Amino acid sequence: MRKNKSRLLSVIITATIIVLVALFGYVEVRSYSVVPVLMYHSFQEKNTKPTPNVTPEVFRRQMEFFANNGYNIVGPDKVIAYMTKKEKMPAKTVAITIDDGDYSFYEKGYPILKEYKIPAVLFMATDRIGQPGYVGWKELREMSDSGLITIGSHTMSHPWLPTISVDEKKVYEELAQSKDILEKITGKKVEYLCYPNGGFNDLIKESAKKYGYKGAFTTNPDKRSPIDDIYAIRRLKMSSSTKSPVIIWGKVSRYYAWIKEHR
Image 1 (cartoon, rainbow, N blue to C red):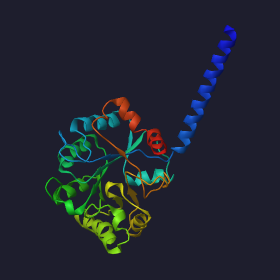
Image 2: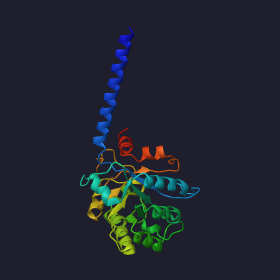
Image 3: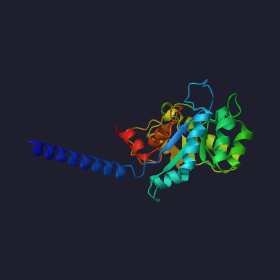
Image 4: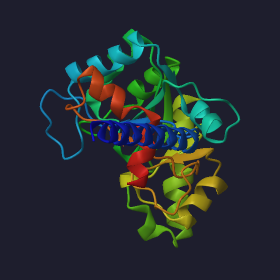
């Protein structure tokens, strides 16, 4: 009887290991082109806005973790190259994006990126430039000239894009004119777009291509969008609760990003 129980237990353990290995292999293959792209907004000690916030202390912990553990921290061109399989993505890869241009980023977040020499993308809505609580023309130029910060468009007025998608004039203003303004400010090409609040549809995607964007980032992609769609690049919201090394490691793994989209 004991031998039978031991044999049964051995069979169960072996079967479990086989299933786990097969599952890991499946996720490994399916998540190959999934780049963990992190999304930040403000960097205040105490959040005073409805947008997600990460305190400067926690942001420093996160960046220190990446810097000290050999992470491949990339800009948007590499994100596209990995997603389209033009280049092989190293196992520990992550990209960092910041939305809105909250002044706390310039004051608290940007110095930390400079300290660790970490690149990031800042998506700016042009109507907010120089408004109370947001970065101005001078700060944008400074960050762009640093070589660390890529400036991308977050449209002109930060609208919910699906509601204006059939209005060609309005879409032109939000996508094309915002791009032109940012290019004049920075003296560099603006090649990436971030949909405000993650909102887009097929018409908006086609307009992004039409107006010269190489890719576009979102937060809430249509589940029908392929995971390698470079005009619907998924991102992971970061918060102040992501501060222990184990949690940071788990959240920025491409497996987590893939599983999150398929649960």
